[in-house]
Amino acid sequence: MHEVLLYALPLFGLCMLAEWAWGRWRGRNTYGLADTVSSLSQGLLSQAAAVVTPLFQTGLYAGLHARFALLPATLWHGALSWVLAILMYDFCDYWLHRASHESALFWAAHAVHHQSEHFNLSTALRQESLYPIMGAPFFIPMALLGVPTAQYAMAGVVVLLYQFWVHTEHIGRLGWLDGVLSTPSNHRVHHAVNPGYLDRNYGAIFVVWDRLFGSFAPERERCVYGTVKPLASWNPLLSVGQFYVEMGRRMRATPRLADKLRVLFKSPGWMPPGFVPVPLDLDVRLAQPRFDPAAPHWARVAAVAAFVALAAGSGAWLWFADDLADGINMAAAAALAVGLWGVGALLSRRPRPAR
Image (cartoon, rainbow, N blue to C red):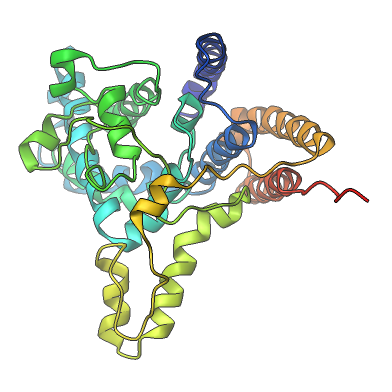
């Protein structure tokens, strides 16, 4: 399915350019250069991860479908079957998404998508590298019900593509649609760290699931974006590993094995006995400025040039990745990760102090 996303990229780029121009014209620009490059870097890393983990992308699903499908594939033909497949995928994704906010182990994989302190269309492309690996078991019911692997995969692409347009601050409330669909208003709430907004509005296409299962919250106040504990870094590898490191710290600090295991599966905010957390004042968090240290002009230009080169090379690689040997794909993914680390390092450079 890499080809589908590659075809969509030019449209994504035009939409982001239009949103940026609209924001500048209206005096409400929602973009930051370093943040946008950081989000797009995570998008590239997620595609690289998808190439080197085919077992978790469709392989596990295909194997279960072949052996344990309860309904014949002949039932899954026609337009109605596609609608049902998308509905089922969206329902399963709701529970995966909810688990990813309520269980620390799953949050560690999902946190990447929430680390941006801006909210714009580039945030939609800030995809998680490890999320599909963690999420594969949530879609087993579709395999058991006989949804063909190709239909399952395409339903996933539809659900993913739908979510692009809801990542914007330039579309307001949409009336009754806000009560049925995931809309920009609903999704702004999901990305906010305001106390009344935390862990709300998980639905990818339909917010009806949130209404049914008690996780819905309407947009009532200005949203402050990011994670409760900000990443405060442009390092893409640190971004992926941030909460895994945090879980490791908590597990080392508590002596009982049972508590170490609880760290993994209880909520991301749960602290084990023996661990002394840094006090966090949400009022202070809501008032703090966005992370955006000033890098030298030359470093910003170099970072953008390097990112464009890496993106072009990645596009060519992803187009042919399915025909390449596993070793080549692993090497390409590693090279991309190192290159994006370099881009983050450039964006993190500090100006020399004046003499």
